[in-house]
Length: 228
Image (cartoon, rainbow, N blue to C red; front, side, top):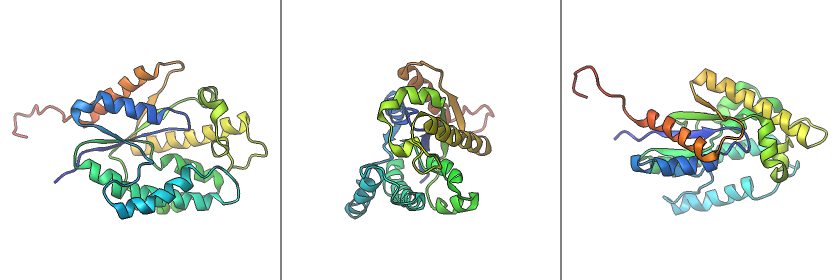
């Protein structure tokens, strides 16, 4: 049995991945598209859920501190997305297309700036399920700063970078470097890039995302005269 398409929205911190994935999935519900949160633990296996819950707490609910290196956090993320792909995404794909609000690519885009080589990054995430289609939300870091300035974590400001002070300057540089690498990955791997205009209403953007996803998951009409 062939599985339905697995799609991911990717982009820098504050790009609106969760908001847009949720709304796009609502628009595409008649086509069976489901939004699956990238932080969701398994509902398919109580054993997997028991192990994934502390991982989720460590990754997203433990606060920020430089006590542990980016190497620790990168391996934790690789473990999380391996489990999520196997225990959350794969079961959901048996029921229809799945859209996640971010995957491991954002983290991977930051590791070169922290001294990681490309082959190390590829090896780290080599066993993680890859989306069939990835959509990059390309948003200017200046816009992201205006959108989230009062709600930014130290990790988003560049805590694991080489910055002396964390603030606007570190955020803009850290996010721009990551975005540049995401753009390079998009070009190399054939991702779909959506440049989000300044001031565009999120619902308008969500409809644009939904329209692109509809095109990606709808089979092209057979014009050859042959039976499908």
